[in-house]
Image (cartoon, rainbow, N blue to C red):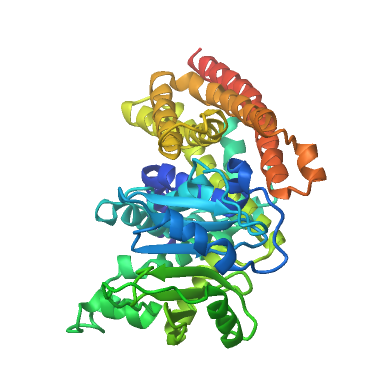
Amino acid sequence: MTARLRQAMAGLHTWAGVCLGTLLFIIFWMGSLSVFDREIDRWMMPATRLPAPAATPSLDATVVPVAERLAAGAAMWTVVLPGARVPAIELRYTDGQGQPVRRHIDPASGRLLPEAGSVGASGFFFPFHFRLHLRFADLGYWLVGAAGMAMLVLLVSGVIVHRRIFSDFFTFRPTRALPRAVLDVHNLSGVLVLPFHFVITLSGLIIFFAIYFPAAYQVAYTGAAGGARAAFDQAAFGSWQRPASGRPGELASLDAMLATARALWQGREAYQVRVRHPGDAAAYVEIRRSVADDIPMNIDRLIFDGTSGRLLHRHGARPVMAVQRFIAGLHFIQFRHGLLRGLYFVAGLAGCMMIGSGLLFWLAARRRRGAGAGMRLVEALTVGGMTGTMIATLAFLLANRLLPAELAGRAGVEMQVFFGVWVLGFCHAALRPHEAWRAQSRMIGLAAVAAVVLNTLTTGLHPLAAVAAGQWAVAGVDGVLLLSAGLAGWAARHGRRSSTAAHAAVDGGHG
C-alpha cells in the first residue's frame, strides 16, 4: 500500500508541477518583488526620493489645497500618509474621464511633485502577484487560487515522494550530470524553506476566502438588507456610507480628526485618510490605522462627519476577522522589520528556484527519451515563464528610465512594454528551444546592468552615491540588479557547459 501511495503521489506531484509550475513561478516571482515594492517605487519614481518626515505633516496646509484644486468634482479623494518606506504624501483620485490618478506631495513644503508617469512596483508587481491583472469575472484570483491549491498538493506529495528528502538536503552535487544536480537544487531549496512555502501558500488562500468560499458568508447573511456581501463587508470590514446631500459644505480640519484618531488609538498613527463627497454638506472622512507597527493588517477605522469633525462610527476587527488579518499580515509583511522582509525575499526566491528546478529536472529527464510535441510545449512555457518573466521585469524597469516624462499614457506604455517583451520571450523559447535558456540568461545579465547604468545617467545617483546620500532603497535595487547580472552570466556559462555535456552523453549512448 505504501509503494502504491508513493507511486500515486509521484504522478500527482509530477503533473501538478508540470501543468501549473510556470504559473506558480510567476506568482512567487511577483510576490518576491512585492516584498520590496515600495523600495522599487523609489527607484522608479526619482522625484519621491525624499527624506522620511520626522512627524506627520499638516494635511490642512499641504494636502487640502492641492486636493481641492486637482480633484475638484471627484466623488472621493484619498491621502496616503508618508513614512519611512514612502516618504512622500500620496494623493489618489479619479479624474473626469474616470481614470485613476496618483500624485505625490512633498510633506515638508507642500510642493506638488512632478507626475511619476508610472504605477511603480506597488501598482504593477503587487497586484500581479494575487490577481495577474485579470479582472474579468475575478479570473486572476481564481487562477492564483488554483495555483495555490496545486502548491499545497506539491508540497505534501513532494515530502511523501522523496523518502530521503531530509537526508538529501545535505547533499549537493553541482559537478554531477545536469538532472542530478538540478534535483539536488530542487530538494535543497524545497526543504530549506518548506514551512515558509506552506504557510505563505495557505495564508494566500485564507486572505481571499470571500472569493474562493463565498458560502462562508452567504449562509450567515442570507436575507440581509442590501444583500449578503454588503452585510458581510459591513460586519467584517466596517464599511460605512451615506449619500451626498447635494448641498455645499466646508471640510472641517483633517488635522483635528487625525489628532482624535491618535488619541482613540492610544498614540498609534494613521496611514490613510479618505474624503468622500468632498465639498458636500454630507461629506464624511474615513481614517484607517497604520499597519506598520503590528503583524496583523488591522482594519481599524474611524468615520468622521466631514463638515463638523464629529465621530460617526468606529470599527475594529472581531475575533474571527482578527485571526484572518493576522494571517494577512504574515503574508503581506507590511509591518516594519527590515531583516524579516529580507528573509521573505530570499525565501520567495527559493520558492522560484524550487519550482524552476523541478521543471528543469522533468525536462532533462524527458529529453533523453526524445523531444515530443508535449515536451517542447512545456519547455517553451517554462523558458518564457522563468527567464522570459525576468526579462520582461527588467524591460519594465528599462522602459521606466527610457520613456520621455511628457509621454501621454506613460504608465500604460510601461506595462505594455512588459507584456510585449514577455510574449517575445515565449515566442523565442518556442522557436529556438535549444538556445533559449542561454540566450535569455545573457539577456537578463545585459538588461540588469543596463538598468543600473540608465538609473545613474538619468538621475545622477549611482549605487555608491545612493549609499552616501542615505538612499538605501535605490542602492538596494541597484545592488540586486548587479547581483542578478552576475548570476545570469554564471547561469549562461554553466548552461552552455551542461548542454554540451548532455549532447555528448546522448551522442555517446547512440553510438
